[in-house]
Every structure is written in C-alpha cells, then in structure tokens.
Image (cartoon, one colour):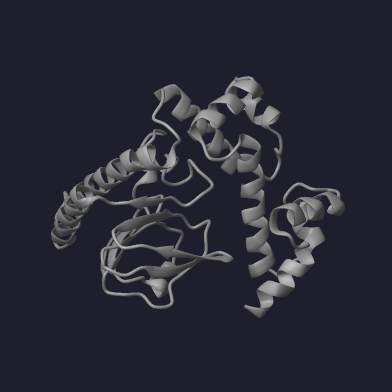
Amino acid sequence: MQVFKNSDINACFALAEGFPADYLRQGRFMMFIWNSGQKSIQIHVDDRIMELPPHHIFCTTYLHKVRIDNSAPSLKTLLFNREFYCVHTYDSEVSCNGLLFFGSNTSPVLKLGQDETRRLQTLFSVLKEEFGEADTNQEEMLRILLKRLIIRCTRLAKKQLLKQVGRQSDIDLIRNFNVLVEQHFKTKKTVVEYAELLYKSPKTITNVFSRYSQESPLQVIHNRVMMEAKQMLYYTEKSAKEIGFDLGYNDPAQFSKLFKRHTGLTPSQFKKQGLKI
C-alpha cells in the first residue's frame, strides 16, 4: 500500500492492491474500487450485497459501510479524504460534490471499455511512480492525477448513469439538488423546500429529474433518509423512536410508516434482522 500524508492539513491519499479494511477505519475516505481481474467480486455495502464485475469501477464515500470478505489482488482501491482533494476544488462536476460522490445518494458502478481500461492502467502506473517521488511537487502532482481520474469517471457517469446526455444546466440542477439533500435531509423533507433553496419551481425540478434521472426528487430525499436510518439501526443502540427524532420525524408512526414502505419491515424488525447478520 502506498500512502501520501500531509500532517499539517490532515490530508491523505492512498493506493492499495486489494481492500485496505484496517486502514479505512482510520479516517473518512472517498474511494474508487476497481476490479481489474476476470472474475466478479462480492461487496457488502451497508445492508446489501452487490457484485462488482470485471472491468468495472465502484465509487463510494464514507457514508457507506463497505466490506469485502475475499479481496483479490486484481482489486485496486484508491482512497482520499476531503483535506487532500475537496478543499482544493471548487464546487463543480469534478469536485467532491460532483456526480461521483456527494452529487448523488447512490454509489455509481461504471463499466470500463477496452480504451478506458487501458487509460486507467496507465494512470495507476503513473500514480505508483509518483507515490515514490518525495519532493515539494509530489502533493500537487498526485492531486492532478486524482483529478484526471475523477474527470474520466465523471464522463463515463454522464453516459452510463443518466437517461440521456442533456444540457449542462439541467445536469447541474440535479447535482445541486443532490448536494442540498446531503446537507439538509434531516430537516427538509419536501421537494418544495429544496426548490426554494435552488430558486426553481418544484415542477421544473421534477421535470428535469424525469428526463435524466432514474429517481424522482422525492425518492432522492427518502432514499437518503432511509440510508441514514438503516446505518443508525445497524450501528447504534438507539431506538426506532430516537432515530426517527434524530432524522426530523417528531411522530414515530410517520417515520415507521415511511421505513416500512421502503423496506417492507418496521424499524424494530429491521434492527432485529440486522443483529442476526
């Protein structure tokens, strides 16, 4: 595993063969997980299991609990924290609030064609070399290479994850909506509230999502709330009532009804099921 650290600003950037589970416990990281082999790899993400096929790359953040039981040498993990990259990049489609990370409440899985696989192999080779260059330009060079990777993956995300390639203003609206949901999902639960923050009408937002996104704006809000609720049920001792209150629901019945509609279980049933896993 190769690691760059700048202790003055608590910045960290690392490249690993396999999945560095122990190292990930030391901080809050954004990650690229690339299966460069010939067999699918099973990944546990929160309460679900997904298959990462060969020649696919998985983008995720510290919002998700990721576990890989049988990490193969063909798996490559690139991880970085906000201090290394995010504070240096303005809010744009290739920032930490871009399509790949906090610009969506999902963790994108991108398919790499032959050309992209070749480019990624070259980029990772250059990264490996740069990790060994301990000079005054190393940090900036590593950051440039990371940005190059993010740009390439963002281009793929636009093609593969959106229903169609549309106007940049529409894509930015979706991204900005998702960023605001990440910031306010505990206190704002309606599309109207986010429309006010964006100075748009709820109808405009709904129409843009219907053209380009697989989810409606209300689904984005509810899915983010559910993701947080599941994590709290799994990893804390709080009751369903306490969790509902923390997530902005003063009426426990309202929270339980929403949770059951999305999962098929009450919060209490979900917590009991989780404890058995």
